[in-house]
Image (cartoon, rainbow, N blue to C red):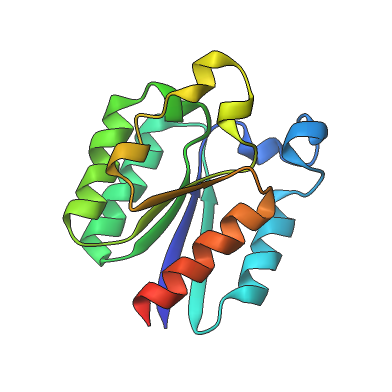
Length: 145
C-alpha cells in the first residue's frame, strides 16, 4: 500500500483549542480519522512537529522513500528557506508535494501573504479547513492513479 506523508508544522498540535474561529474545532486526531476514511488504497502517515529540523528530516525521508507529501508548514511557510529547499528536493525528485492551509493566508495579516514554499510545491490549497487536506488527498490519489 502506498503511503502519503501528511506533515504539519508548529502549533498545529493545538488544533481544536487554538483559535477555533480561524482553525476550526477539530483536532489532529479528527483530521487523521477523516483522511484515513477518505484514503482509498493509500496509507496516511500524519505527523506534527514544532521543530523545523524534524520537518526538514521528514521531507528528506519522503525523497528517500519516494513518498507524496501533503504539507502544512504553518508559520514556517513565511520564512523558512531551509524548509523551502527541502520541499524543492521532493518536487525535483518528481514527487507530489501539496502545500495546504486551514485558513486563507491572503485574507489574514500581511506577513502571512508570503509563502516561501508555494513556488516549489506541486500546488497549493488553502482556506477550506480540513477540506484543504481532503482536496489535496484527492489530488494525490488521482495523480498516483
